[in-house]
Image (tube, rainbow, N blue to C red):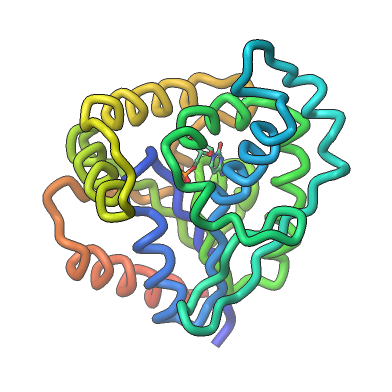
Length: 230
Ligand code: DC
């Protein structure tokens, strides 16, 4: 059977990556977490002092991107790929709140987007990929055969993220997590270059009141129909 491209976009903490990962596994497709790429660039920018200090140099960051090597390396025991920044596994560090608080700003930089979108298009050129992010169905793969746009209320999403961070041992306040979710929603959907929006041909999927099993079942069945009709 021919393989298709599956694009999953939506607001932060809608559970895109959980669904995308499991869907990819069920279909034997490759999963690409594009948010991890923007997060790794953010960590790079923080470490190099382009952001997070007293002054910011977003233009300088744009010019320093040639010194940035991003790679996904498959971890067999986990069953998914992990993000490597200049040879170092940064999977844990890119998920912390300080990175989350800076990442939307970094994702507004045109040079960053151009570089990452080209990498993503290259990773998906053979199809058989489930990619999640904000602009996959609109910019990266506008011709993707199956597009999903995930939504849920900000409070539902903040509670999910809050639990995740606590489970990971981070000391955070729920209010800060909610604020971060709302701020990122705003920046992600109002930025100049490829803002977050639902592609016209995407299926909108609100999972505020839906368990993971039901979501996966529904989306998997949708995907099978798209693959069969392809
Ligand atoms: O999916 P995530 O929460 O890990 O993404 C982190 C940030 O990266 C998100 O706030 C916006 C940005 N992003 C983006 O602009 N475009 C993408 N395709 C993926 C993520």
